[in-house]
Image (cartoon, rainbow over all chains, first blue to last red):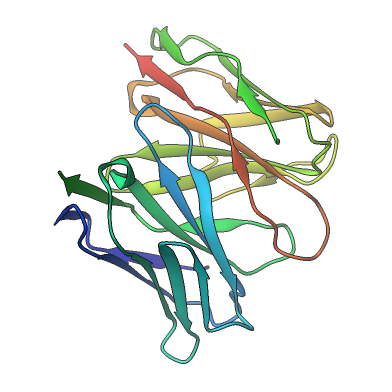
Length: 112
Length: 114
């Protein structure tokens, strides 16, 4: 089955700096890559996603890039703010039942 | 907005007890999922369902069963709870069909088995 690896496990940045989280996947059939943000005491919430026919997608301060050849995708957050502090998960999906395979998570701490 | 609710935020049970975790979604979604979340392991799929009365094993189904008698409700059952089932349990739902769709998550149930 699919295997998704996520790095780093923790990331600490100064407010205003950029943050980058990277994921790799193993199954070349994967075609959908969502990113979730989980705040303390809450369930994960989708923040951005990308499909395999697109190389990059941007939504305000958040962007995701996908390299299908290398089988990796990354989340970029610019101008970080303290409210960006949370755990971020990447995922990959490769079949019709919409099963997701999640990375192990990155705890982002934005210092004011 | 999609809403996924879970019956309890916190549960404390004893080893050997039968435990029911309930999940309800209000968007008429076809697919529903149960995950457990443990530090450093991310979210691991226990079971999922793509239709009423249909269920499929995920990656870690041992010790769990599920029930989906109505489209909006998906229950996770621990037949005989054990201490290694202490975890955060997350329910999710998504639309059916062949295209990959976003999964929407509930707030989670933190289960402690003593």
